[in-house]
Structures are given as structure tokens and as C-alpha cells.
Image (cartoon, rainbow over all chains, first blue to last red; front, side, top):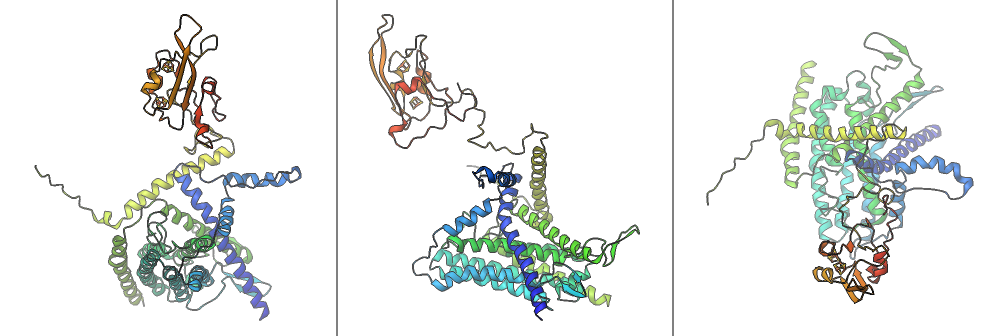
Length: 367
Length: 179
Ligand code: SF4
Ligand code: SF4
């Protein structure tokens, strides 16, 4: 019992630590990727240097990191912590403080159902590389993502500001509309694989990844999930510089937590797309005993290495999708609000219903 | 007035799905991304230094090449003996739209020249850098070719230049082609 507990704690620390670090790194990626895309250099002025000569070797190690501007994430965090924590007059103190916490906690909780590797066999212990092996994992993930809406609504509601209130309402209606599409589009995958367990869904994708059997669902899910992260082109709830959003009355680290939530949700969406449509931890041609190449060759691979390869493959796919989402974010302009609702309710929603219908018919005919 | 009816362009089915345009946009941005990334990577190993991976000039360390005719901080030119060329004709003071030049004339010891400035004050805080003073000067005595751009001071007084400063322009430390 205690052993299992320790194992789960280690898994949680490993995965959530990875997610949080990736989210922190994404602030850097966002700056640098957009800069390189637009023929700029990007932020590179935050640097750590030691003056005394006996620390010179450390300086030598830090120099490339300085040149890449990696310490900007650190400088951001320091700035966030040192800023005044402002609370508007008449704001609900408890809810105002609780809102960012609710946002970030539920975004992080959703990760616990995502499998990041196959079963790892260590000295006759089978360790399932997943924090919580929930039977209806999909429902859990969607529940957590829906609860994240409360953070947004409460932030607008508790700020005692009409602008924040309107922003919160706008954000809530956007997230609710797109959540429906997201939920229904994923039904195609559930029907096709016949399970709601995320680990089982990944196991079923050993030969054909989800996007091959459900291309429409993939597009719908990705669009809806991007809208769920509230980033460009769906960033109406916050609208970085122009539109007044639900967190106008936040400053310091509370604002930082909303910002972190955005990035954590980006990672979450990348994880979900990987899990549902890109074979999770599956490596192409890798079966539980080794590589079966399509031209008939076979290479034996030890089982521990397979587990490690699986984790690496998952990380690579998540990193790729993060790159893609950043590229989308820096390519597309923002939707207008009526276009957003039009897209959500009149295009994506009927298409997802249609996809579910067609998938069910095919599944029934196959039986 | 005749009315011209503009026909609104019909969007095709694919236009309305947004997908081809999104793909095209992503293609353009990622092409820039990977090309620039490759150039940056090659720079770190010392190759292809002559191709720039970005259009950025890292300002204080690296300055943009300035055009020869760029209007920058003023200077007063000198004769061979070091005296100012200015003959205190007041043309520049008269033409200046910002009225930031203030000249006090005095008699020139040289009998061939009538006057010279006793003081020549120019307030850069008011100057609009129109260059009229340079164009109007009959003696080529005032020029704006120092290439000094980083003009800044902590007070309005600090922006005022007297004749001493105008005759001896201190070059900008960041200017690679100082004069
Ligand atoms: S540049 Fe124009 S504004 Fe400035 S001193 Fe000369 S005439 Fe006056
Ligand atoms: S126009 Fe030339 S010569 Fe006349 S006062 Fe001005 S600087 Fe001196």
C-alpha cells in the first residue's frame, strides 16, 4: 500500500513537474518562436553573470543560456512576485483570491488521467505510467476542464468591475459553447475504440493512430480545444492589448496564475490531442517486444527501453503540438465575437454531431 | 453622382472552411521560422555570417548604417584659423520655424568680414530638425552632419547648446563612423 503510494507520488512529481516546467518554458518559446518567425531576434537581455573570477566556469556555462534569453522566464516570475497585489475596492476578497487558484488547480488536475507511458516492469512490479488509472478517464478530463470555467466566471464576478464582469461572461459563454463541440467530437473516438479509459484508447492505437480513423473529429477537437485555451485566434476573453477581459483587476502573481493557466491548458490540449489522435506514447512500428518494420525486419528491444522510448515519444509529440499551437497563435488574426459563436454553434457543433452519427453507423455495420 | 455597384466577391466552399488559408498562413510563417532558425544555427558554428537571420539591429552595441544626408545634431563649421565661419547674418535665426536659434552679433576683427557671433545658442529641446537653418546659411557655417542621434538630457537646460558645444561636436559613442 505504502509502496504504491510512493510510486504514485513519484509519478505525479515527475509528470506535473514536467508540465509546470514546460509551461514556464513556453513563455520563452512564445517570445522566441514569434521573434524568429517575424525575422526578429527576440528577448535576450535578461542575463545572469557572476563578477568574481572563481565563478568564471559558471559564467562559461551560463553564457549560451544568456544568449538564448532563457532567463526571461525567471525574470518574469520575479517581477510577478514583486509587484503589488492589488485588489479593487468592493471586491470579494475570498473569491478574488480563489479564482486564479481554481483556474490553475483544475487545469493541473486534468493531467492526472493522461497516460504518458506504457506499463513499466521493475523487479516484478508493474507500474502503470499514468497518475490515476481512471476507468472513465475522458469524463474526468472533461469535468476538470469544465470546472476551469468557474475560475474565469469568479474572476469576473468578484472583481467588482463591469468590464471584468462582461469579460467573464464572454469567456464563460465561449468556453461552454466550445466544450460541447469538444465533448461530442471525441465521441467518435470513444465509439470507435469502445472505451473511455485513456490508457486503453492509446493501446488501441498501436497500428492506426486516431487521426487516421477520425480525421474530421481531429480537426474539430483541435479547433474546439484551441478555443478552450483562450489564446489567439480565440482570445476574445482576454484580448491581450485591445479587449478588456476578465482579469483586468488582477495584478502580480494572481495575474501570473491566470497566465500560467493559459500555458498549462496549452500543454493539456497538446497532451489530449496526442493521446486521442496521435497514439499517445506509441512509437511507430514498436510492438511490446521490438520494432516490426513494414518491410519485414525485426529488431528486439528490451522492455525497459521500450517504456523509456514510449515516454520520449509522448514528450516529443506534446512538444510538436505545442510548437504547432504557438505557430497558429502567431499566424492567425483574432475572430470577431459573432464569428466565434457562428463557428462554434453553426459549423463545428453540427459537424461533430454528423461525425458521431456516421461513426456510430459504421461501428454498428461492422459488428 | 453616378453610383457604382461593387459586386461582393463570393467565397467558395473552401474559402468558407478557412482551412486552405490557415494552411497557407502556417506555411509562410513556418517557412520563415525554419529558414531563420537554420541561419541562426549556422551562425553559432561560424558559417554563413554574411546572411542575416533577422532584421534586428541590437541598438546600443550595433548601430544602423546611417544615410549621408540624414539630419542629425548641428555643428558650426570653422575657418582655417579655427574661428567660426558664421558671419552672424541672422538668416538661420529668421528662418527657424521653431525659433530655437538665438544669435548675438559682434564686430569681426578681420576687416574683410563684417560680423561674427558673440554667442550662438541653439535649443535642441525646441528644434524640429527641419534643416532650414542649414539650407539658408550663405556661408555653409551650420551643418547637421554629426550623426549624433542619442541626444538626451535630464533637464531642459541640458538640451541647450552654446557656441562652444556647436563648434566642437562630441561624437556619439555608439557611432561606428565618427567624424
Ligand atoms: S533644424 Fe529647423 S528647427 Fe532646428 S534649428 Fe535649424 S531651422 Fe531651427
Ligand atoms: S545663416 Fe549661417 S552665417 Fe548666417 S547666422 Fe546662421 S549660421 Fe551664421
